[in-house]
Image 1 (tube, helix red, strand yellow):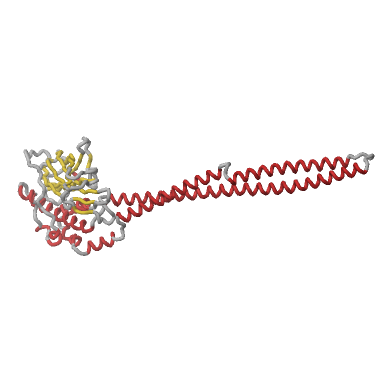
Image 2 (tube, rainbow, N blue to C red):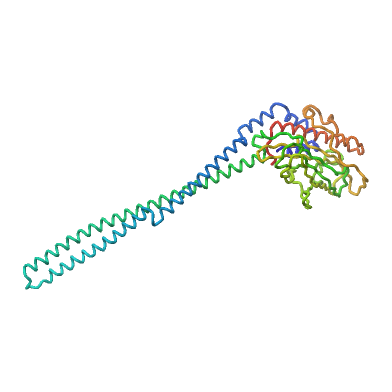
Length: 427
């Protein structure tokens, strides 16, 4: 879902530039934004449409594979010595060879008969001369017949061989076309599968299946209400599926934001969030999209604990911070959703070397998102955060409380807007 990165940006903007609330307030009005978003998304395919397209692409690919297999078998059959045209070509070539041999014999007979006539002695009788002449004539006639037979046999052999060659060429061409069709069908199938998988991961291109789910909860425990610069603190994030259905993939979200005492200068680059799973001791930095690795699956009523670590650089000035947590889920059937609001845990940043003593755990902010604040109130009139306002321990508290309240208000507006837009991607 796009909710989380949008919220993170909104929070940062709100804390560093409270006046921005006034300039961006039209974005959270009830009329134009939703209509504009509908214009952008109404033509995008639904998961059902993508599933239909993927099924059609698979069927086309299966047909192409079958056609390629048939074309390959046809070529192999045509190449076989036992194929009808192969047998016909072999028979015709044998007949042509036999006709050629017969013509050779007939031509030799003419030569022999002519020699017999030419070598008749002067004493040969008329009967002997007549017999030799008849033999020569008959030999020439037989040779002419053999010549014609050979020509016919040669022509038949050429025709038979050409027919077999044509069959082989046609079969090879069909196989090539079938292989190309299979390749194209596979590319179409791959594209359709990827589009469907992406849509399911994102919860649908049009976001129709994404819904707010307050029963997917994220709770922080063990985060101190004061963190000294130059130190690191470990705490725990518990993600709970309070519904009666398994969530195939749950993506925990965490975002930390910090300022100096004025509440106007961001010190985000000096605070760092890390995490590790219960089964691994290796710490990983929360990525720039603020998501951690998915919990797959999270069964109904079950929870998963994630070890978290907050590191504050020694160069960080005294100031204030807030850690936001949430969670999104994505199911294999394309449905998705997540916490409708971010949960913020506020803490003080003490200067390096400070000794704050024993401190309580950070508590969730009591400030509730209020879109009407975003549209109608100035930054000076926004409600302060309950947990920070209650301490009163620093002159910077009003600024942070004000900024935090503004952050939560703009965050709520972002949730409101995104929910109306039914965002479908977490990327």
